Length: 89
Image 1 (spheres, one colour):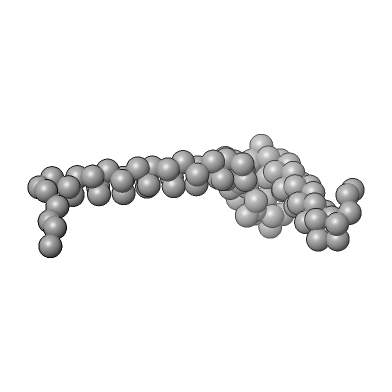
Image 2 (cartoon, helix red, strand yellow):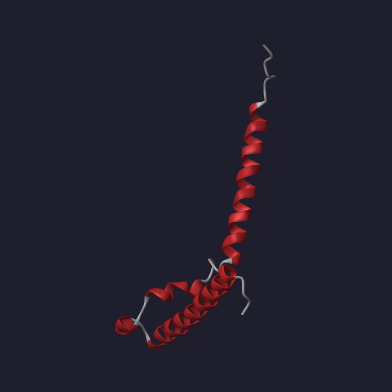
C-alpha cells in the first residue's frame, strides 16, 4: 500500500483555505449586488408609530428610505412577474 510522504497535510489545508477564500469572495460579490451593504436599511423597521422615538431628521430619513425600498420592491416584483410570464415591461 502506498503511503503519502510527510508534509502532505499542508497541501490539504492550503486547498481548503483557498476554497474558503473563493467562497467568501463570491458571497461578498452576491451581497454587494443585492444591496446588503446598504447602511440605511436600519430605517426600514420604523414606521409612523416610532416618530416620537426619533429626531425629526431621522424620521424624515426613515420615510425616505421606506419609500425607496417600496419602489425597489415594486421593480423587483415586476421583473419577477415579467420573467415568469416571459414578457418585458
